[in-house]
Length: 145
Image 1 (cartoon, rainbow, N blue to C red):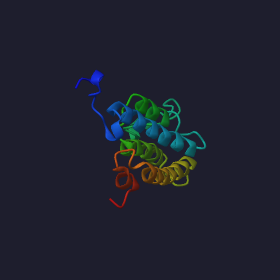
Image 2: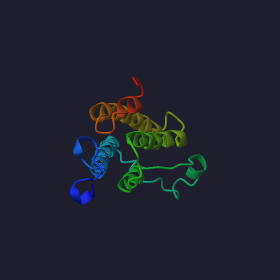
Image 3: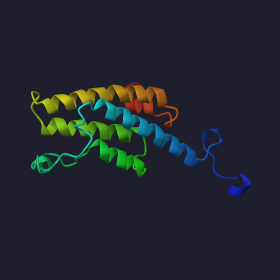
Image 4: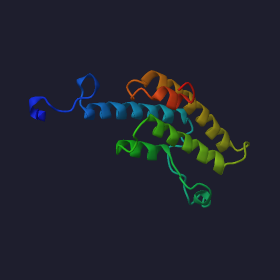
């Protein structure tokens, strides 16, 4: 059949692949928005200012901020929730590596953000595993695969 005659490729539930991808992207946007809400101080929202922190790129080979994650998501640059999770974790890890002292307020904020994102991702994975292909529970939950 031709697409015009109703022969377009259908995903689960009769929806086309484009519908599934849009739904998945919308769920991932929700995950990123929820993670951004956990950044109460807004320190992970924007890239580190290299004028203020000139040695940052020497220590952090892959800088990332929430704005970068949102842009990549808008471009369709994430295949799944696990990739989003890794980006969110990288944001926190970068801050902890650069602000290595546990006494640093930035280290403590990053550590707190990391733990909150872990809990968020676990909950998200349990709630949306089927919508995201049924693989999220183990992949994002960290255990129980």
